Length: 305
Image 1: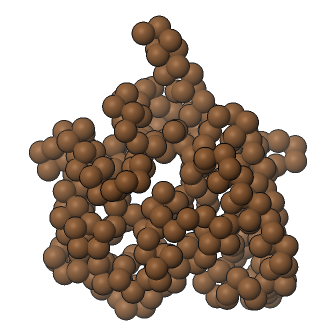
Image 2 (image 1 turned 90 degrees about the horizontal axis):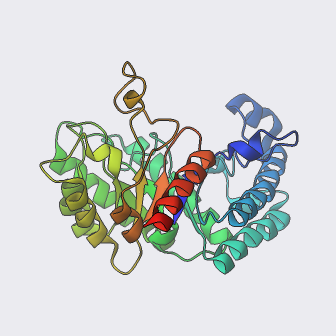
């Protein structure tokens, strides 16, 4: 399966836009409180269903949902929302569609989710973030499996990789079963950070957390392995679950002055072996449009072959 993350540009650009990332600033949260959070959450789950239905209608069965689905969820339990009953119904409707259609939905908390930080407060916030993402998946009734993953980076070394890996593993062990069974960890895009073999040896073998192979990131942390070799190392950490991978192309291929880590607006191709053995999240600026364009090209080449 091919997927795309978060924003559907086609639906967002309509006169009546659909989006599931309605949120607010801290000042607004403090002044308007849970009733406003509840209203936004209700709208977000309603629009998530419509986005998933659009995806299904267009043959897209892999989607990464925004981490703003329930705004400010670090501050309250889901059941405290005034519209909780309606929200639960809307969430289960999304989950039923996902389950019945054989779709895959994942989350990817942002850089602030640092389970391996050397700050206890930062780790506590990261654990809370993983837990509430797991609560959303539970609310949708989806299996507690990395198939519905909550993907994170270690994202730093804090001057001591062994100690950092140890803190990450300890934080994973602190998670509730529903959160722990869904966590995945991704290789980084800076040479001194975390590669696929390092994550496999220092995290996956100690905790069972699967490694998400990011194709573009591997160019920064290859450690002498080819793309396919690194993918196979990561894929072995998934057990019976089909691996999820990320694929993007560097923006500097078309704009040489941009950062080497930046993603291009589209992708020209995806290696056949990657599509054959994993579900591929396409990380490109044009989102679902990039997916549809590259899929059309792959279909043409398959038919020609």
